[in-house]
Amino acid sequence: MSAVWVYAVTDRDAPLDVPGVRDEPVRAVRHGTLTAAVSSVPLDEFGREPLHRNLSDLAWLEPVARAHHAVVTRVAERGPVVPLRLASVYRDDAGVAALLAERADDLTTALGRVTGCTEWGVKAYAPPAPPPAEVATEGSPGARYLAQRRAERTARERVRHSAVDLADRVDRTLRPLATAYRRHDDRQAWPAESAAPVLTASYLVADDRRAAFTDAVAGLAATDRVDLTGPWPPYSFAGLDET
Amino acid sequence: MTGAVVRADRVSLVDLLDRVLARGVVLTGDVTLSIADVDLVRVSLNALLTSVRAEFADDR
Image (tube, rainbow over all chains, first blue to last red; front, side, top):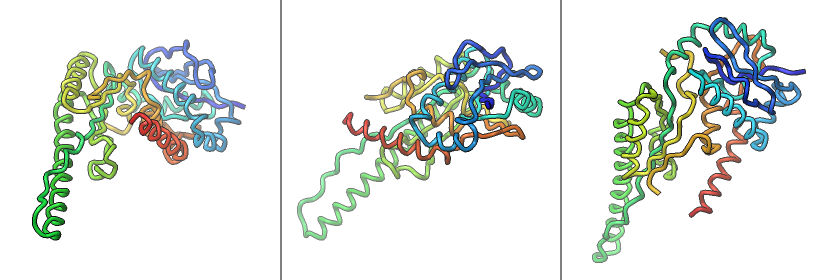
């Protein structure tokens, strides 16, 4: 018994020359102008129950996630793509075609939104904390203690301010170069974990602005730790319920 | 190191899983058998993050 794994939806021909999950051949399911890139997966491994078990096993998950991403990336090389969430498994090809029909308008809109664009991931990290300020070594133990506490508080505040400044500067610099953006970090949570980025964001960038965008990131990275990943298929921007 | 451009094809598993599991379109219908969600992979993700942190510490 097998089911159907869907990788992505596009309005171009789906590539058939890349292996899918478990090396199964990728095929196309069409409805109107839409094409879903799909492959068969065995139900004893990918049915609801076994899948839920397998997803909690990293050794199982990694090759599956990489295969999914490889197919999505290959489709994206041909044209606009709406990537599906990992492990989107359906009963059969006819069911997938019916789903394409049902959501045709939303899918077409989403494809239009990402046409000619790629996604870029940006993470900015807070500058290292400055060395502790000189603290008076004179005066009573009580006064020294209070001065020490004050200095620590000031240092913490300074780190927090420079982190917020950096996040704002990165966002202000990059957002005008992007078609759309998503902030993924929880600004309130920082610095719950000081090694966490102060900004985690995705930017949807038109192909003709790619050089300007990557140059701008390089400019930011000259003075601060700003990491760039990409180009990605538009995983963060292909939502169906957005305008 | 200050700043780095990382090619997506060598990108870390953390960034990849973040995208394929937490983003990507959810297309549900009568014929849907399953879709991954972050709750289902929490065990995997915790194991991954622990190993990444250990590698990170080794680099220091």
